[in-house]
Image (cartoon, rainbow, N blue to C red; front, side, top):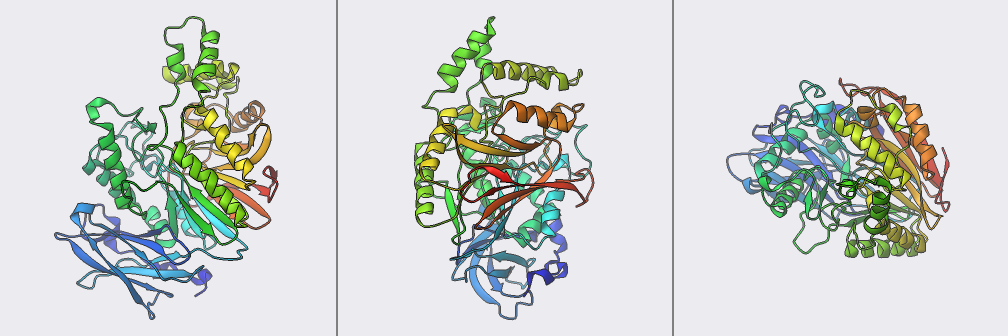
Length: 535
């Protein structure tokens, strides 16, 4: 069946899928983690008892050639979510699938695909991050779901947010009708499950999952803000043991997303082979290897002579080579896997990860952009950012900028592998295109996507002109090729043997349901160039 004729009617959703609390198939279907001959399939079937479901796959929506590919039980222990790996599939093929309950009830029909093997001329990724439901509608998901030219969805993290109602967004910022459950911050097992159920009830997110396979890795908000191996900014002792909260958050993430379960000794990282065109490496940079971020505030506390204090912090703390972002095991795996990818003749090495890798210092102009009525913490942050930039320090220590030795180390390894590196990033809520360097030599490029709904620079500098912000950022940061700081949306990353490009799609609004776009920007890199030169 030609994908261009694939109609909406074939994937109409049961009414129960729109409900957060219901029985039967409550949250649609999803697929993920495809290989050349397998893909993971997901659904949720709520009932009073554990229920065995049959899984069917076919090559068309009428299921005339349907085959049972497995059975799986939706259990209360797993919040009635169920997932199964369908195997023995053909490479580079689209399939349709559904789950069937013992009484004959059928789930929505999902569409998924396997990865190509051998010579591959093109592959398109839809790249998303930072979807905070109360800030607005998931119009980026809706827009992507209308397309027939995407092959795979990559979610780089912040699939949801942990905050209680009225925190982020504030009551004034929150959009009516986009409420989440529970109303308080998610901390306990039941809280995390309710929050995922609320997000997964969104019809646009359901639709995206229904139509395309996804590969995903969490960032911090799937746990709590600014999470790291030993704690988080938004976690204190009154909220219980951190290791327990990490365990619960990971458990529920794996229940509700189309991702595999992981045993205690299995690594977090994974890779996916796109024929001879690309290897996609997915890393985990939050809870397994990341050290506590260095804090400029700690360096300045109690100090009256600021410049020497910042210089001492820069030289002794910030540049400490022992501080880890990925952890030594994951870092070694990534370097080795990239070398192997090149040795196998793969054209592109695509690293899907969470936080901005390019260097970003605060422009001195930021003080002029501040709203005089900005909260004191915002004014202080801007002033500290200016002083930090004068000392050669970045403004965000929770990104790779906070781990410069680890960044330089892994980029050197990638350069030694002679990789054609494309880094895909989320987290910042804004759109960026960087040229990445090691020892002043080009190593690859970074395509960083804007958020689905979470606010970016415009939230802190509402009176500043976006073009002025972009110009100042580029003039201050030589590796920065392009940026957009005021629009929500997503990226399409297109890979061909000759070039890799990213298209940033900008939505007109997230405050009402609409897929109307206000524009797009394209930037690209030629194979073998390791530097943005096209687009």
